[in-house]
Amino acid sequence: MKKIDKLVLGSFWGPFFLTLGVVIFIFLMRLLMSYIDEFVSKDLDLATFGRLLFFFSLLTIPTALPLAVLLSSLMTFGNLGEFFELTALKSAGISLTRAMRPLLVVAIFISAFSFWFNNKVSPWANLKGYSLLYDIKTAKATLNLKEGIFYNDLPGYSIKVDQKVKTGKESKNGDLLKGLVIYKHTTNGTDLGNREVILADSGRMYTSADRAYLVFELFNGNDYQEYSDNSAVSFATTGPSGQKGGQFMRNSFRDYRLVISLESFGLKRTNENQFEYHEFMKDLGQLNHLTDSLRKDFRTTGLGVASQSRQYYNYQFKPAPTPSVNMAVGPKPFVVKDGPWVDKLLKKAGPPRPDMAQLALSQAQHMLSYANSNVTYLTEKEKNIWRYQLESQHKFTQSVSVFVMFLIGASMGAIIKKGGFGVPVLIAIIFFIFLYVLTIVGDKYAKDGLIWVPAGAWMANLVLFPIGLFLMQRARHDSRLFDKDVYIIAWTRFRNRWFPAKTVV
Image 1 (cartoon, rainbow, N blue to C red):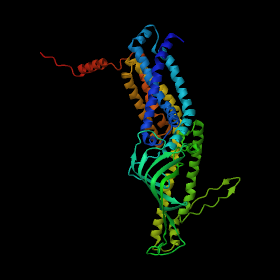
Image 2 (image 1 turned 180 degrees about the vertical axis):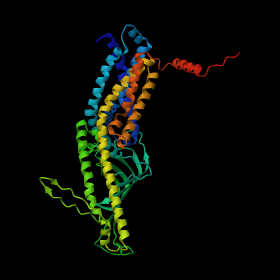
Image 3 (image 1 turned 90 degrees about the horizontal axis):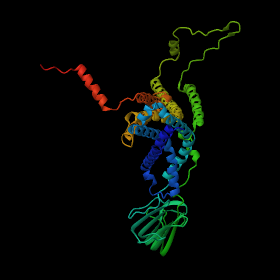
Image 4 (image 1 turned 45 degrees about the vertical axis):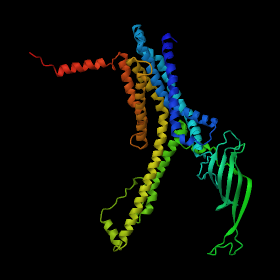
């Protein structure tokens, strides 16, 4: 490796890894802001939260690589141009393309890595990350009693606390609760409403050591229970309407412990096979196989619609008679004779009945409903095909966009001759937003069937690649494309030519 290659590569790797880390961090913060309501009050341990961030940081790498390559290559050649190192290289007979050669090899290597990552790692990270996120979203929040409000998230219980008193120090038995009201909605396994009510002056709430049970330690209260009695029918147990009632019992206590299972709380892992149907969870081979299967199913379903629609018609034409076949001459064509055969068919039907119009209208409405439902069904099937095709194309487009961003970044750096995090960051963000917007627009058009799926997937690269070639051509010829003096001089010449100043005599 020559010194020029070491110089260029040494200037590239620092901004590249720094930009990659910053972009991944930004995308993770976006994830946290989107699902912050799902994370709070779920009592997630650090290991679970760390796994979630790890999986989603892997998912952001394919998106972050083009921006990292764009900004780092722009800063590299911007610094070389700002400190006249590019000028020194050109004066020594070294062309710009020769100076870009080491980064060109690196960009090709990163593009290949991006394709492998999209095809192998991203489906695995998508499956693990989104299944874990689903489990977190469906997990119940931890028990949090609020003063004066009934808490109903515990299955079979409604709990209200009038006042929560802080003890001033950590205690395994928790804070002191005053004025507890606990309704039990179930008795003997049968839902009978609020058949048991517990009132307590004070108490404490804490969980067991294995966090499997919630324990209420209650002080100075009463337990009111109602038992249904279907056998005894008396004035005491029946109401004015003669309806059977029940027996009531009250138990007073000084110290009472109520143990409630927390099985419905906490994080429960879902079978990951439930998420494998999504296109983001598939590699290229699986996507191609599913696309072919969906195409065959779409064709089969479309052909079956015509045969199934015959049941909605009252009159069907008889099939044409099978023509006789002569082995020497061949089959004789079947000729339909001209004539008023439709009128004859109507005459055979006899005079029209009064309900014929209503019957025809009802039949037409059934046919229209059947046609609309089949159109919707086939359209959804075709959209599934487009989605899988689009994801297959993205395995290639995201890797190629790395090379396109290198082409733009290196050329822009050589033209503007500005390093650091000022102008390069601004230019990189503009081109990255342009790439992102074109990708979203192309994906939307492809998913809606407005354009050919490969055209929608490659729209961003097809637009930006000619821009990169143009900038490369300008950079090789030391173009002053972004110097304002060039445009001031051009405007002055244009004005003097077409609007010459009048000579005052």
